[in-house]
Length: 386
Length: 236
Image (cartoon, rainbow over all chains, first blue to last red):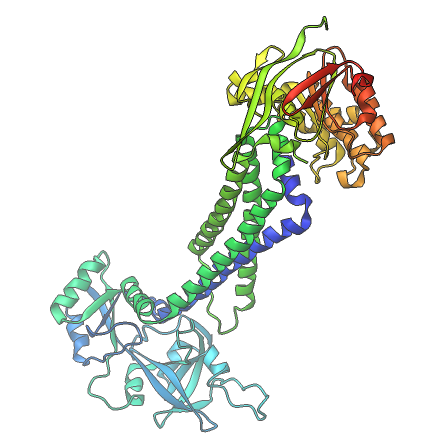
């Protein structure tokens, strides 16, 4: 009977494509929009991911997320270093500073100051130059996206493209000269500002004069040290907040989740996709069953059981669901691939595929259930009605 | 009296439909015996209960009261599963509107009853081609219903009703959608291919042009059988 079910489904190409397209659209919306959402949320903690080496981040207790800088005194670094279980602790400066470009315009940049000796927290992927070049006089490393776009030299004509910054070029940070000594690849941040790496002492020189400039203390735990225990010990000893890397990501993620309209905006889009997908696919599938009700009646009269008809409808629903889901996810993945070099945030983890798969399954189950109820209640005597 | 044992025996058959809180009596005490090997026609005006009677005989509708035995089996007493099995093995259907599955070709349509009975598709389609050959459509096995004329579609429907070798074939107005020539051809085929001493044909029809194919004709009106005659000439 499977063959008959498939022929019934695919025989009318127009209706078959209508159902598949409805499910494809629903699957696309339920995959692509959450992928952008996940990508965007991942950017909120991308800096924490990029600074991969430390186990623990120590900061002012009032810090709510990675960009919420509440500077500490430099002496806090030594207090953290003195705690048992700490292998090493390094200072990290993070702040938004205005860079003056060669054409005289200003661009706000994310300036990262790394420990002068170890340069811990530097970019993992250097495209040009070396991380150690930061030790050269006035040396800074800029990220490739910033170098190409916002920090690039303005084009001669309004329609022309910016000339990317290159090693040897210079810019000004707080009236101080900064020489580009390297180009790095870093994950885009939530605000997509250019990222400039320099040494901690130079970053303090670039930053406006303040009594406190230490943004974070990044800590490596001794081998075998329980990280949760160490964070508790740091907090108890110094009164500062200490988070594991995952804990700090979660803190940042939760802040954006609770304090921005992003989740609700995307949630509405996803819900709309689900509703529209259900309406189109469910309605088309139900209509398809209704139009075939007489054929189901004929099969019933000939001795086909409700169970057999139920399996036929389920097979039809599973088939259109699988094809629609596959096409939707495929288009979403292609979209992500094509947008990989743009500013668009896009991340498609396997959990997201499960989510959209569950959504499509729900649509198909709902459509199939309504259809099945109709067929089960069907009197086979309908076949004698002309 | 007919000497053959009755293949179908209906006794004091009553069917009452509930519609919008009102009761409509479709059959009101029908008694009818049909013998094996017989071609019985049920005739009468619209709404007289012909279709209700063949629906009950074919086991796709339950009577309100009275008895109906098909080959000695009281279908009303059977469990639903057994009734389906009985229907799948013993009854073939020919409908006025053909009721072929529009997306299946002729051979696939004909093979449906065998597939319902658990025969493998390849074997079912092989046998379907053989029987299509018998009804003169051996060259059109791959044609979709929409590519066939009304007469050809009805011949496919006859092949479908016959393929699983049922003991009863019920036909609802098999010629009313056809022109005279096609109707006669369909009846010729039905009588030649379908009717033998191991099978019963019950045909509901308005079409007086085919009355002469019947062994007996039961004239119905208002839920009753008025008379059963063995010649169309005896109908008024």
